[in-house]
Amino acid sequence: MMNDREALLNFTQRWLTQFDDAPQSEALHGIPSPCIITSSLYKKRAQLAVFWQPVLMEPQKTLTFVEHSMNIKLHPSAHIFYGTQYAGDIVASFKDVEADCSLPISLVQIWNDDDFSELQQNLIAHLSMQKKFKRIPTVFIATTAADSDIISINNLSGEIVKECLITGDLTVLAPDLATFLVQLI
Picture 1 (cartoon, rainbow, N blue to C red):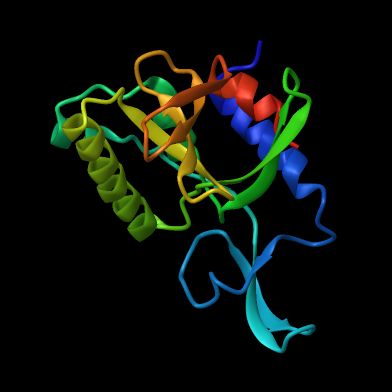
Picture 2: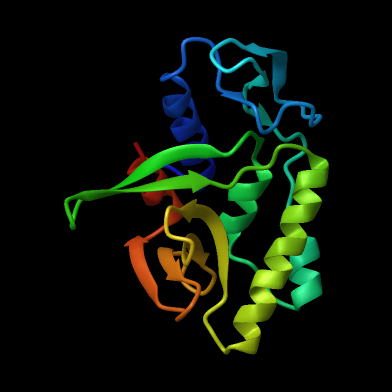
């Protein structure tokens, strides 16, 4: 069985095969990152775009600042998910075999060190709200088309869940991060 880090790197490589050259983003143009290969004029819309590739974080990062700030121990999968690579956000679909459907998602990724600091602040805010409402602590890892639903790691079990931000309801999608990443297309 694959560990979380291998599953993340394998998925990222699988995801990259859809591009002729490299992923590109207009939104990330002009923002420094170790991922940037080149910038150019995006011909179809006469917009500037950046072409990028994922880059391993050396050394790997951890979310210990979040842990210390919230006086909580985060699930090891959260450290691996956010501490392994720099990349732009990755659009994919979760293939729910049991429900026989796909859920479009966008995996939250770290573009640069400033982005990592901002992510930590957002995680602290997220965990603070969960604590206030006496909800199970989660670490978000992806967005969905529905503004009220996100994809998260259940901090107590390590399960990957679809989380309703309004009600706090958690729907299990996968027993762990590695299994979830294998099911992404």
